Image (tube, rainbow, N blue to C red; front, side, top):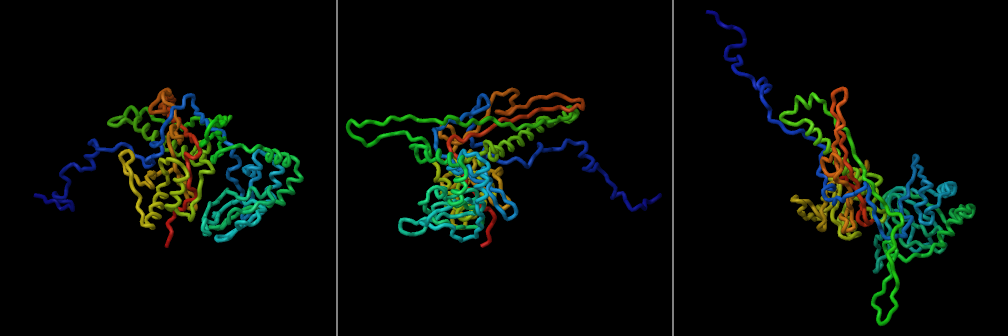
Length: 468
């Protein structure tokens, strides 16, 4: 009788099928395909969507006379900063003036002024003889309160300006003291330099004569043509006549599109379609990516995106950098009936830090069955599409929504051919010579701001964690 003397004894030998081999013959319990790109997309959820037949939506408004209130842009070469000549057209007195040679001459006369934190650029009550164009940095406009104390009446930052009246009015004085809160760069144009260019440019003289001869139109605090009214009168008082004037060229928003071609090999669709439909899951994830891009465009698109189309009068700056309760209060109180605050998740964390530092805790409100933080009863919703700069600053948006409330609305068109979801179509494009099935997936959308105060933006919000 022989004895097995090999290292592997009978007890060590495998006596049943290994799990690794058995798994090859079994149906594994599996999940549907997952993707990390999917976010909550709160903006798409809270926007009311309006049918845009004909692919466009026209916003009719009352006539406004406010001009020249845009942001001025600059070019930086090394340490030298220069205003773009055409951007001088953002000044009210130069709006519509197109002589590039004269604008370039004015830009050449602008003097660079570097400043550090804590400097006084102008003093309230002193003669104003120049305009300040802020290329970079933040400046507090400090006035005198009722009881003689200093109060911050405004904040100016990148692209802002002050002292427009000083170029034409020799009796102009500064209405506030300008104190810098950060380091930065400003360009100044003096009244004397402006006058020298004007005296040698007949076209500019003619333009300024036209500007100064424009009749003063009666308007309300929003710049809209005033509706003449009478109140508190007695007897047979002659009532004023009135009508509501409209913009002659109202803005139209055309539907934008996000598209892709989904490709699936016929072999995959034929042989590997059980227990999960391959085309269905490929399409599901593709649509998720399109919806993410849709929200990104509604926030950032240069033509209709909310950040880029927010009115300049509706943009404010933080007073100290981080998003303090005071900043949020100012953002909310500048408009009626705010519905939602939108911020990047990291910005929301910065808001929480500022509240915690002051011993405050935000209330929560129910929104679609979910508890979300709120400030003054306005929900604070995450939106990862709001950009963060390399300096760790971001923006906070506040919006009012709905047509009836003169707010922000989303635009789409339902009932399109091959519609798979509202305003999203999936169109079969055929099978090519490589046996690949192609589907054209298209999502149509846009957004419209019905009146300027429907969107407000708190800019240059510092979100980095400060060490104390």
